Structures are given as structure tokens and as C-alpha cells.
Image (cartoon, rainbow, N blue to C red; front, side, top):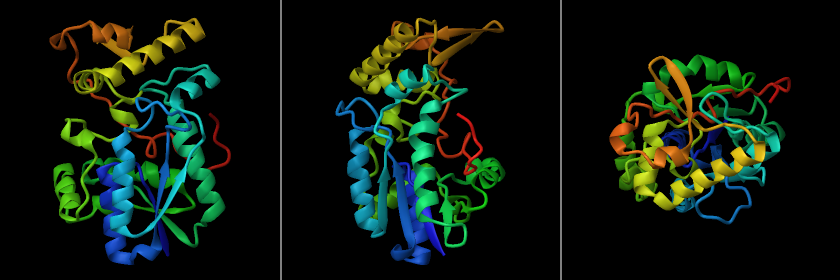
Length: 271
């Protein structure tokens, strides 16, 4: 059997690929990367620019096959085309830019009889396994980082360094993941506050793009929500930027789930 790693450009998917290469050999492993940057040259849109350096270094070190797929659009163009601003409850950018290009490649280049799909979640996310297994059927799925020896994210980062691969810079800046340049429509107030502090220019691009979508749709929509006193209200990134840090909900982190949420290999899915 051959293995396809759903390669996000994060440390978990690198560690997943590393374990598979060590066990099965580089000739039997492919890292599949869905690029949300598309054809947009703006460094503040899509993946962090250091992600591409990390991927190059990681693939050189792993010695396995690497495949990049892309829709050609970025998330903001998808939001306009779909006339819907992605948020924590529905991330159409994940479906269109991550899942669909990857699924197309898998169906054209693999079969359930020849390939196993590897997902980079770790032992802290074991509760997600059953849903993922169901979503990828009839392909078999494996979760190498959910198996012993169990490693924390910091230990995976140290492992990469020991192998001669510098981890993506976002981890050193305090981000929990290396997706979408430190932002993500599934993120919460705490994540975007981190983006504002660490990369204010990138935050400003997110805030500006969100406002453009609001004006394009002519609707009061936002990526974030604010929950106080039993009420839920919209919270734009422009409004969040004007707040003091202690006025933000620092427990509202959110998280990325492009290949573990709302994914299905079925042809009967709907957007």
C-alpha cells in the first residue's frame, strides 16, 4: 500500500509524513498540499510565506513525492463568488479551496485498493477519528500521531529541528497552527488578537477584505461573533482592532479543521 498525507504545511502533518516515511519508505509516501493562496501575489493573502520555505525543506528532508493542488482563487474571491462570508460555523473556503481540489486529485490518482489516506491529527484529537473514517470511505484512513509514542506539538517541533528542518515561523510567534497565514475564518477573538499583535499589516488586510465583502453583499456579516449576557452579536475585525486586549474574549480561540470537518469523498455532497 501507498500513503497520501493530507499535508497542511503544519508540524502535525510533517510528523505524520515522517513516521510513514520511516516505516514504509519515501517511495510509498505522497504529501498532498492544497494551496489556498491561489494565484494572488499578495504575501498577506493565503498561506504565510514561510510555509512554502518549510514545505520545500520538509520534502527535501523526507525524500517523498510532493503534490500541490490549487483552485486558483483565494478565500476572498470564493466568498464573493459564493456570496457568503465564511465563519466558524460554515467555512466554504475549506470546502472549495482545500477539500475539492484534494478530493479530485485523490479520485484521479489513487484507489481504495492502492492507497491509504493519512491525517495529521494527534492524540489530543482522538475523538475526531470516527467521523473522519466515515468521511473518507471507501478509502482507509490512518492517524500516525494518534499512536504511541505520543508527542506534544512542542515535541514535534523539536523533532523537526533535530531532523534539520526549521519549523514554520508562526509557531515561534505564538500561533497554535500554521494555516492561512495565522488567520482562519474558524478562528475566534483570541486568534485574531494574536494576529493583530504579531502581524498588524496582515491583520489589516483581513479587516479590509472582510469590510469589502460586507459592502459587496450589502449585509451585516462578520467572521467573528461576540457572546455576552446570553446574546450573540456580530463582531467585525475593524471593531476588534479598536478594542483593548482585556476587552477581548481570550478564551475564544477557535481552530482549523479543513480536512477533518465537513469533508466527504462522496459525490453526493452539496456545497
